[in-house]
Image 1 (tube, rainbow, N blue to C red):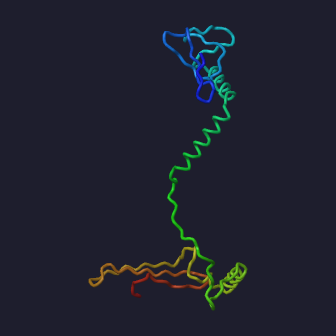
Image 2 (cartoon, rainbow, N blue to C red):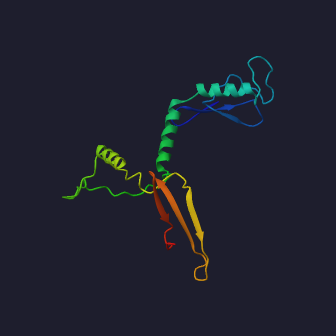
Length: 179
């Protein structure tokens, strides 16, 4: 017995003589032969449940039985649901600019990229970058003086002689008086 929905499409099939109670099968299931559970013939073409062959057959059967209308409706429902979801990350609120900001009159213009490179080359040529007091060499002339007297028991002065471009530059720790 076939049951129909309001639109006239088949809804389900009522099966008889299978079990002691009523059994219904959805109308979109395709089948060739209904047999009672456990009474599957062991012949070519029959597959036992929970086997690799059955899983492969299930994948093939599902791939061939896709309903395009159902998939379209499911896709639409998913897109509607997704649109109602809150964002995963809170977006900060930015004010919409009212126009393009103008540079004030008489404000200096910045250097172009080419001018910045030329300025960098000039600084390298003058040696101002090389003599900035920063070196990656360890100085061989490092002396540490530890003087402890009653007035200042924690007095420790480190005088470091750095060699930069062949010149010696003595440096002292900040905040400590000279020796």
